[in-house]
Image (cartoon, rainbow, N blue to C red):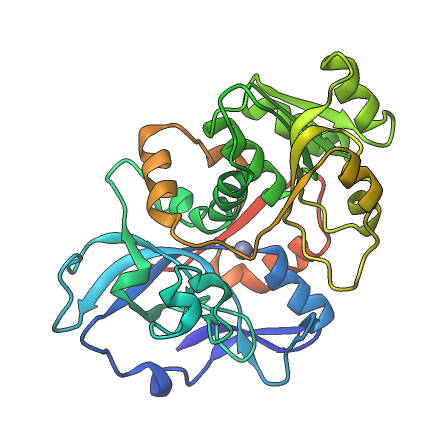
Length: 349
Ligand SMILES: [Zn+2]
């Protein structure tokens, strides 16, 4: 079937790819899904521009894409919760159901997890896929396909806010106004924060952040000290939670500075190399540090918040491309335009 294939670093093509042979088999608890919308993720772009992310190296042609929504077109014999015609979004990582991590409820850290568009597993920038019922979620009528394809990145923010154990009225700081930083800010507000500062160097991204909610306050980190600003607004106390969503070692090195005593830092941004960390600053605050790896058990919560209007991700979707233009879409995404948050690709229906 025609698919967006990363042939090797720097080379993408839209071509027939023989994935049907691997995927013909529809198990009793599987669904066949016609893809509708697929978001372009920073990780997809990174595989295109760098050919690898940490230990995951593209050594053979791989189909990209993992942020997806679509329609069920065929169901396995034991599928009970979904039917043909249901509109759905899909969680892209499938763990081994019998692994110790899965049995402990931490299926996202199962070393055997198979995650779309993480070598050697193919992604879903293609017309159809086969996916387990257990990792597929029905969309209410008022949640569109584009929003539904945002559930995957939103899940990262909701998982981070959950790990932070936010209490109503908390003050949070999000370092980084990329797509993950912004969904984290929205998740922190949904969890009860009174105010969320979003810090970045790009003015345009801060404007987008502030447009999302009155309780989101931008900090231009190139012009102002994040810690000084937060302390000035909190009688010198600091914020309850810092979310590190840049993946920059420089940001991570100073992550405890705006944090109040007893506060929590959540590390979200991927760090391919070891980084330095101010253990003394963490100690004098008795800071709690949480790390997240993707997410677990949050897709139904994300869908419910989109349906109720608790979270609106539509302003984050800044550009939509047709599947035929997907190579061009990736080239634009690789140039990281300041005006864009999330770009998506729509497949022909
Ligand atoms: Zn993603």
